[in-house]
Figure 1 (cartoon, rainbow, N blue to C red):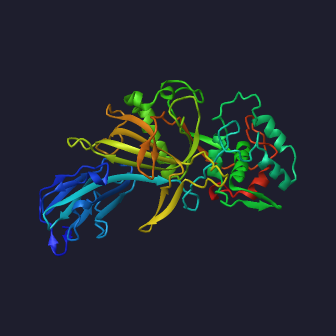
Figure 2 (tube, rainbow, N blue to C red):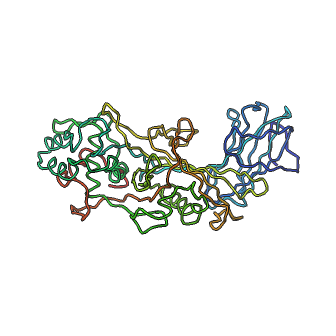
Length: 454
């Protein structure tokens, strides 16, 4: 029997249900010196159960022991007033956990949170955080820094450093827009997002080669051209309709908030969550994802980003059936921008250590989405993919600094691809987009391939 405070055994037999909550501030108040609280974890997909005292009624004399459904136990940290238990995928037991609480003051508040958080990893286990990028050759709104097309500086420096010709001429022929007929949003985000996964971030201060200095954003440009020529993709998830790459059909043209029930069907919500778990969590693989029009107005636009982290929180709004949950999915990705002064746009997250655990924390320079949905689970803890309760309510921009949604309601992500190791041989793909005059061996002298792609 757990000891919940020094020399105090909890001899109570009755227990009360403590529902999973959306936030710590939703902590429930109890007026009692002792309680046994039952918490039902619905998901078998793994995650962390956190139970702690709310700040308003947190006392040094209070005691808390958390007992997991597989027999794990954890005592609350005296500094934070919180205890946690980690569940491996498929090992939740019956899902019923207990919190044994002692509150000599006769009053306490307590919260229960359940989160599933995962981030991409390189082959050596280090977090794989893609770099932010920018390359819109047809845009008239971005800073007048040196680029291909109107701004040829990077290619001129490349040709000078490596003694090659024709790189600039090819770029002007293929990626300039003298007639002004191309859309400003069109660019190389497909190859740029992939390159940000393939290569380590270049130094913020740039680097010099053969007496020529390249800034960080120019170095990324060469990585984009490299992937456009040698990169490979594997489709890992797509909206259920229509045939690939055709931008029409209900799920493409409508937003989840237009018909939440339709977007909650198995082939959309369930398969999407499963793809994230399989690749980002289980394999450590980031995904290049079309996160759609940033303003939520044009469904045909394609905006590719590299998703490197996700976080799911479930809470239970229905006291009569804790298998019915509301879910919040935060997707963390890089973003497509460049500072006005042309300096490095850096990376969208920081790596911190919390209690010896490596944590990847978005720093507000990426493009993050918040997807809200409802999901019913079976008694086994598996998602009940046939339940009419399942709905995908909305997609919005997410500000990780303020933990708030911003902007308009958005379309659902369209597809997700895995980046695989580039070809070992020189070749021309029929649809290769990369500049053929930028050589593979030159780029690999300027940028470092991540361990998993070498």
